[in-house]
Length: 151
Ligand code: HEC
Image (cartoon, rainbow, N blue to C red; front, side, top):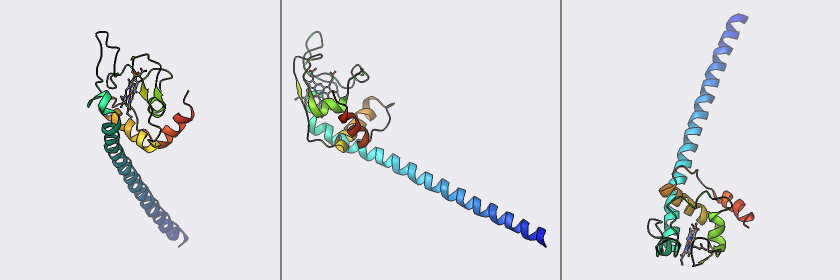
């Protein structure tokens, strides 16, 4: 009698554990789908931010414009990778405060202090998706953190 009851309890536990595992997997799947959808929306919203604020100078494909023979006068390209991973070079800070150090250009870029952290995260995700597909998804929190450390 005791033995049989124990056996039934064991099967019941296995059944419940199986159910919990199944639900956990299901929930994980839902979260992954949501993250991917968030990514798609972020890129799409970022494209609008780019077209409105950046495209006129940096080109419809980030190719830049108005370069001289040495390639260093005018609007630098954003799609060519040389600027992306420079140390102490932060795109969210450039977008917020502008760029006036004349390293790449005899022109200056004014900042966009009114773009929100979400706008800039979306913008980064749009640019990354198109030109730097190995970069990971940027969140508004990442942007806030970067802004706090702008030099
Ligand atoms: C009115 C023209 C103009 C607009 C609009 C503009 N930029 Fe710029 N941007 C410049 C110029 C000029 C420079 C170079 C400034 C320098 O080197 O001192 C620059 C530099 C940059 C750089 C650094 C690139 C490098 O190689 O040094 C980044 C990144 C950048 N811009 C991103 C953006 C983004 C993102 C937007 C939209 C939110 C934007 N810019 C809008 C003119 C513009």
